Image 1 (cartoon, helix red, strand yellow):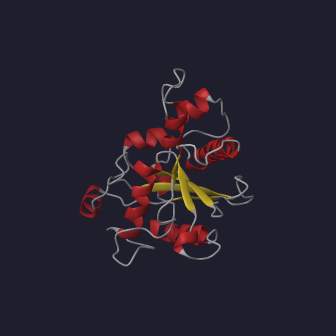
Image 2: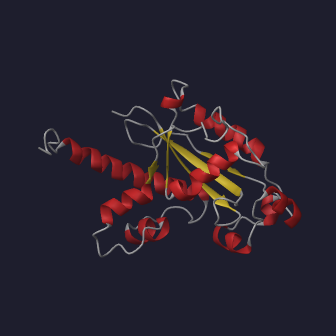
Image 3: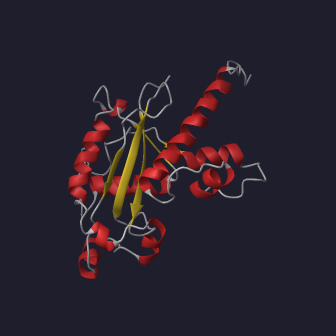
Length: 226
């Protein structure tokens, strides 16, 4: 039985490459592990100023802010020039996540939740914690793995949706926008803004997990594979 909280989070970035991109916005909400509801007043959100200039970015091994990315999320250079540094934002985000680790140990750290976080957002987290030009931690003793979130468990809602709808002819895309806004009819917030996307993904996660709990409790699993 899970008693750990979940943190649903999302980045907006300078490019689409998780191994080179820079975050320009981060947002998160905390989800109660037993109630499967967003905790009141648990929002975290900040713009982030990326590194600027082709020489600086190339030396650091990161992508500059690309026009295609701005067209998607609308975070312009003028807006981001006024934003705090990643180092500052990450210190605040680390403190925020740790507030929801009620035993203050790695095994009770919050479980990360997001749409395609396995392929995109979590690799960025690991880079921020462990790799140049950042390495802000927290990280393990070898300096290769993040220690912010739970070391094993994670929930990618894209994987959940694949399992639920892989045989449904009406669902032809698992992108957050086309599935949740298009197929499910979710209409709150602005697409491709990290805070709006986090609330949408949290709603998807909570509804799906409550549905799974209800049905799992009614299913006789014991000795079902004999």
